Amino acid sequence: MATRRAIRAALRNFLGTYTSRNTDYEGYWLFGFLDGGLIELEVDLLQRSGEPDSPTGHAVRAATAKFEDQLRKAGVARAHVAKAWLAIRKRPGRVQGSINGHPRLGHDVCFLAGAVMDSGLRFECEEVVFVAPHDAGLERRSGRAL
Image 1 (cartoon, rainbow, N blue to C red):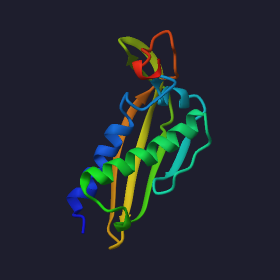
Image 2 (image 1 turned 120 degrees about the vertical axis):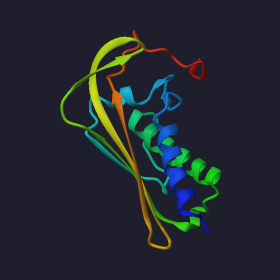
Image 3 (image 1 turned 120 degrees about the horizontal axis):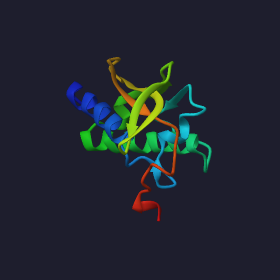
Image 4 (image 1 turned 90 degrees about the vertical axis):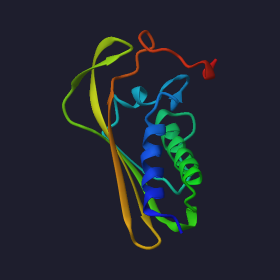
């Protein structure tokens, strides 16, 4: 059975991978597309879903795929995970941040990933990331999209 350390590592690595620049939409960092309308998004990490060809649908599909990948890398059998979720919540109030060296107004967004194991043990991991609305004039497009 998976150790506590393994599921904690899977959750931590999932958030790091998910919030990284490598999670993109049309070649740009995904979360800038969500900033305008996002207040809260809940994702069941054990169920693949999401509307096609929208930033929100892509966020859901990317979350489930990246979580599954991190479980595999950590050696945690999916059958040992009774429930897993991701909650994305935009914190109130705008904050100043930087995008590629340019000052921008945006929001701190909280990403909370959790899992309940088949033993009943519950684990959570949180990461807060600055997100500004997408601006193609300031952002660099990934070569993967070309």
